Length: 104
Length: 233
Image (cartoon, rainbow over all chains, first blue to last red; front, side, top):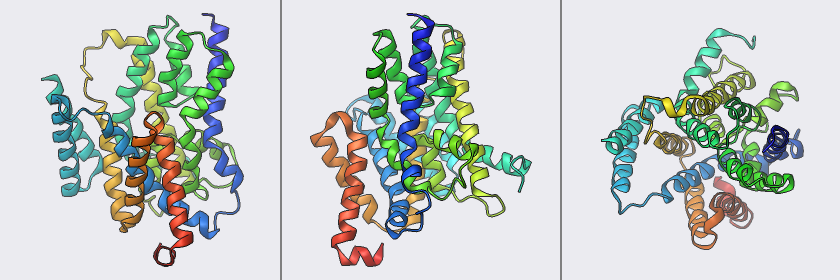
């Protein structure tokens, strides 16, 4: 595989990725105050966040040991977050628990 | 307010630290995989700088190994990242006027950065687009660091990062809790759950893009056809 091929592929992937992030800004620039856009702007994030969490959790096999560890780690994350409301602390706590379980 | 305001930069760094824990292990995993292609390590760095998309970079390793054609690479990358089309909707008026900074903010709109930007409250004393710029820059630098480390020193690392990938799940979970307390209304969460269910049952392969598209359509339909939704949301 040549360097030229790799460089060309990188340029193409960069443009293709940028092309997925750009459209709303081109289409709706200057129309931010439209009630429908305001509505979407408000409710897309909670929907996307819910879907991302479901996506991350769907690939776990809950009948395996790893599924058990993931459940404990997730409970830790949520518990620490409801208790302290500190994003960094919750993430570090949940991830540490998961790492400790899986490496032990 | 100056772009190089040090209080603002420090605050942006602190805000993005949760992303650091997600991007470092994920980037390293990519670097390790990339190494097997036989290219010098700095091309992994180049990919992190220019492409900056987790899933697409992982897929790229497979495509490059198979010497895929450029058209195939373009189409596969576009579709894998297609959910990002909807991300700008929530940030239309947050990136300021057209400028290099705005273009960079659009370029840097990954899942993690989008989630963080749409959930946190930017401190009032900072200009939003400038604060976001530093958030985007720090986040990408974690990704570049991870990818580089993985490709350069991956096999010699003494620290065992196994399981660290849970940080991404933890980040989205924490931000979901924050979204819940920001929005305080159940409808978008119920709609997203229903859309995910349908996407998982009917279209297993492309869950993300289909669930997001479906949830937006359902939410808009509810608003058009239901007086109660129109009044309350």
